[in-house]
Amino acid sequence: MTAGIGLDDPAADDRALFVPAGPPAPASARVLPSDYGRGPWDHGLLHGGPVVGLAAWAAERLVARSETGPLLCARLTVELLRGVPADELEVAATVAKAGRRATVVDVTVHHDAKLIARATSQWLARSDGWDSDGPPAPARPEVAAVPDDGDFDYPRPGFNCDAAELRYVTGSNEESGPGVIWARLTSPLLAGVTTSPFVALATLADLAAAAGFERGPDDAAFINADITLQLNRYPIGDWIALDARNHRARGSVAFNEAHVYDDRGGFGRILQSLVEAPSAPGAA
Image 1 (tube, rainbow, N blue to C red):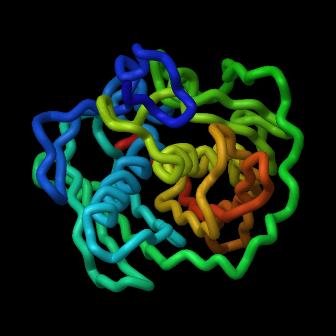
Image 2: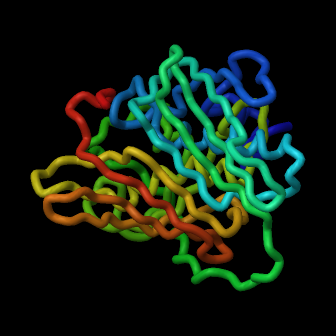
């Protein structure tokens, strides 16, 4: 049986975020999104998380097929160029620079031949010289969060409510200001394919913007235009914690920064550039 990280339910593939739209090529694949990948901005658009996860899967798959040896993704940057429709997508990965100590992989996501997301990733050789853990993680609450009836009309099924389990330590995705959440992926990324710890983390990473959700001075909502993961290892276990806050300056732009933890301790950061959300969610 194949399932996502931490899943032992034989029916997990029925909740997958994507299903294959034909057999994958060595460096590309066509996929169909499911309703479990939908986001709150527009029920016809995907949440950013599944798109980031899809890029991570394509890059990891290509690196695994290469002859560079075991490399770890130290950085993944995904640019969300426009709203991603819940329709057939094509994802393709290419090696921009190959090496046994450092490899760079680029990924593109197209819809109807239009580029809608792109990514670059840096894969580095692992070192056994550092064995210290990062700072300890915040305690994980025992009760799962339920999205409140606030500003967002969450689709059901949809990513926030049905593909991930959230537990708030402080704040919430409806409460303005810094926040700390624990999250675990409860849906596989791709039906019939095991979700790796790296891909699961990438799929959850976009939730950092929700954890640090904050409105602008005119009560405007903000949406992230990109996402960058910087890692020194992969997560251990199903759960990750995101300690997130926004940084902004008057007359300038804002970004979200999150420290990433698992039960072993801190191991990475997430950065997201923020822009005022358009009145039409699919607008550029």
